[in-house]
Length: 278
Image (cartoon, rainbow, N blue to C red):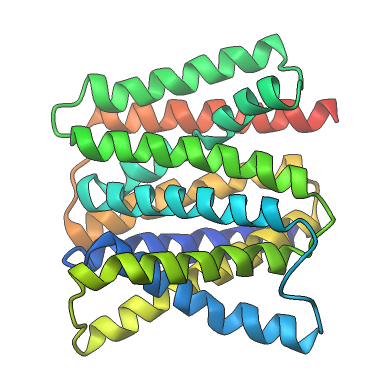
């Protein structure tokens, strides 16, 4: 359990550095940021697949392509929201993705939702409304981008479940990164800004932080019971808030903090309930 906690903390730190990097690179168009995020990860996925002689094509090609396109939309919207919102707020809203996933599962996979889970979902949405409805400093467009990101991330969860064990996790990630690299690369041509000095390092590091964040989160979930470790992923919100305050002098009101606490608490309780019923 101790190792699992350490792995999850490392994962949260990696994702926090990714979020901070996106915020720092605010002058670059979101497509260019997505392009470099994908490029950095491809340095890891391609060698892994080649070394382990795993097919790049995969088995569930249509689902792999669908997951990649939906994931690209989710990532683009999230990065766009970070440019307009305080980083902690953007991350908090994105984390309601499991709620959308549960709703998609209800209608598409005919899965049941426990009555108490509806209570948690309503509480989490109340937290989201607190972030926007009671706050005047939350950019409306950024708020919409974050919600769209959460919606599409929820759909990603469903598609990955449909893929199941029929494709290696690294094949799924590689499809996502290749698709993002190509599409974002083409879309970024019109808005391309030539990076200078440290900006090259910052842009390429996005993929590195994203890759290691995903790897260590997976290690944590493999090391211990999901219901015990999964709630720890929400410490990314805390780390990101602290980073935003320190590096970008972001300001969080009491209402904002209470909204974030309500979202995180509701989602943590939902994870515990879901894993107990399995």
